[in-house]
Image 1 (cartoon, helix red, strand yellow):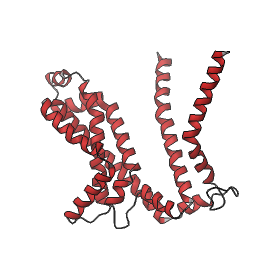
Image 2 (cartoon, helix red, strand yellow):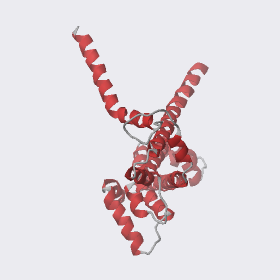
Image 3 (tube, one colour):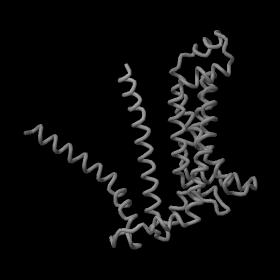
Image 4 (tube, helix red, strand yellow):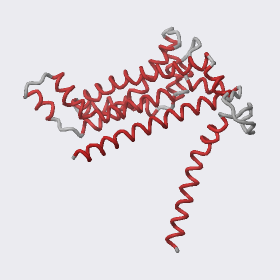
Length: 265
């Protein structure tokens, strides 16, 4: 009896926790199909807010800007962060610690401090704020996360692997691309995913460094929330569905590959 009560209480606790986390998301998704502008009263099923979202040039432009900046920032920061991590792994401990301490500043700093610093920097140099300044800011604050993700994997590698490859006739570039990079590829992918998430989700820094009518999804949602636009529910629902499908694909494909390998063996 005691074990069954503990089991039921455990399931109830898990259920309440899931409801606490995902209840607001479910409500948001349901009201994205609401026929009226009300955010609390249901008045019938409708796709009008999705139609309004896809007919809005501002919304489509913001989505395009977010995706393009996130992809560019991810690609550049992943390349720079990976090369930097490889270089740091070969340096002396004093240099490595100094660079890592500097690298930790963007991570530990509150976003508002980083945002104001970027804004003052661009104003001081007379740079027109817009797409380019937002991209530079995103690359800057994404790169430290890539370095912190890739460096621990490099520390666990056998340092003699690259030397062995070059002893067998490989050039330094070949040793890097054919020996080192394949070994640390999971860490590189993890760093790229973190960078993409940080860039796509950012609001505070983007808000301070943008201009000339350039906005991303976070700024668009902020502006929609101020005028109570139900299209925000439709946009959020689409993002949630895309993220959910992506997570399913990322988790299902490796398991399917493992099953195929197990069957082939």
